[in-house]
Image 1 (cartoon, rainbow, N blue to C red):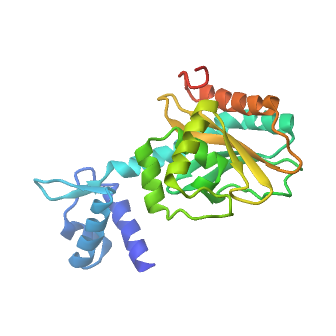
Image 2 (cartoon, one colour; image 1 turned 90 degrees about the horizontal axis):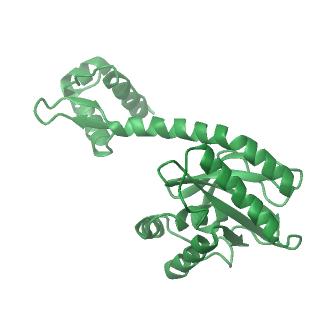
Length: 252
């Protein structure tokens, strides 16, 4: 805990010093040994959270911290831009719908609209799930590069959640190609037995995949109607348009 507190203090001090600080200056301001300050700064530098001037050797806040705060702002904006469409979709298909984003190796629920028909699968804001075993994750991977997908398989230690979870990289990539073609994904009992998930992609103004909108249903009670999938696609399209997307993925 002491290390975390010291690291936070270092970042706080650097955020107020536009010209940067030397190791000794940081140590004096935080009241820690110079060796400790150096180790903290080195770790922050390695993770691109601080930058070091090659001439003065002074440290200052890195741009990665700015990107992290922008992501928070982007997520808040995404929630606001999606809310009305999620409510409309939930009422229309009589199901709980989720807005999900990719964070590291997990799919995280950013927001959801709860419907009374939710006893089969529990979801809440911040709920994290393995990307490869979810419709929300698979549809995001479908519009990501193959390099990113391969990196995920290497770093996430992909394993079976149920007997139906796809864990072969080749099979997974083939599945992603089908998803891109049909513009929606299906998770058939890969995360939970007797539960199916369906998801569509959300794009930003730069035509980048940023999120997905999804819903789940009991397999024994649900028949996949084109009308329901079209409503899901329309919801994702409206959210994408609302955050600036003007590309052609929905109209190809």
